[in-house]
Length: 147
Picture 1 (cartoon, rainbow, N blue to C red):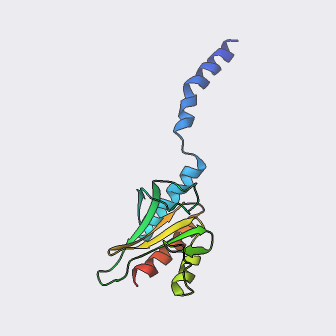
Picture 2: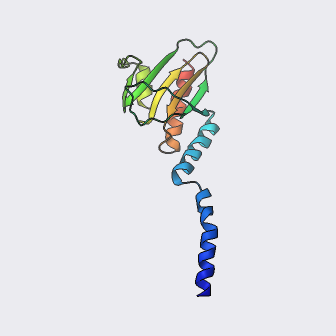
Picture 3: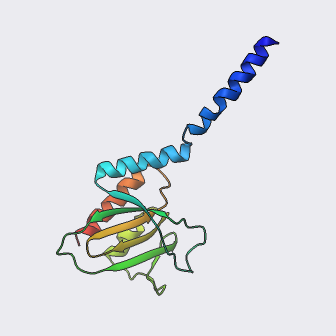
């Protein structure tokens, strides 16, 4: 009986330690973030104003991966992916067939937005998957930053 009481007390004392351990999903996200950082991508949680026509489950703030653009880069644009494989602009017009569309389609299906600004190119990514998807994201952002 005494052993049972001691074991119960130890279980009650040690159970909060299990809460401190990250879940598998959190561990996977941290691994992707660390690998992306090693590849040279920056990452921040950025608040998002999603268009009304995007799916309702999208997070805000969301993980924004970015890479700097050279000062000579021109053109600012934004493309959204409301459904896997379909990239549209702010007026919901499909991206015309082009090398850009081919690059956008090579991104993981949980990349919801890609944006080029004066100084950086960024992607809003749901961070689902593995390190391979982070490498694909890096290749595309690297290519888009140089154009």
